[in-house]
Image 1 (spheres, helix red, strand yellow):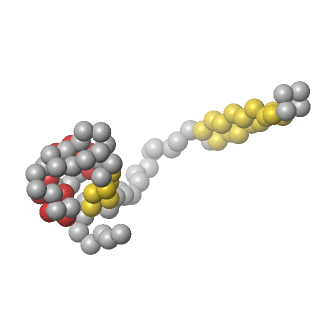
Image 2: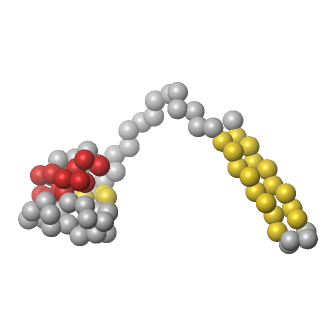
Image 3: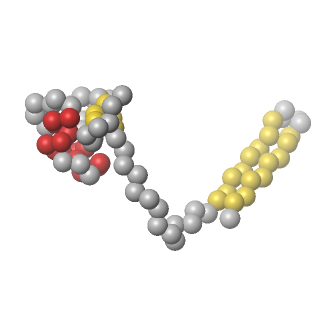
Length: 85
């Protein structure tokens, strides 16, 4: 079910919008594999492993990282083999 309503108001020279929807989660959805991720705040390889479900060794190897703590905020990291820019 979805609903979209709007109201024009010529006195305020604008419009008001209202959105309403219900998401159907009763069926399964495909697992999506993200090929890259960006490091948040003070994340290290262990944090990214937990968040993205990949091995620490893979993150370090694919991104030429020496230690799990050599990741900077905003750094773009490859998560899987065979993914290129």
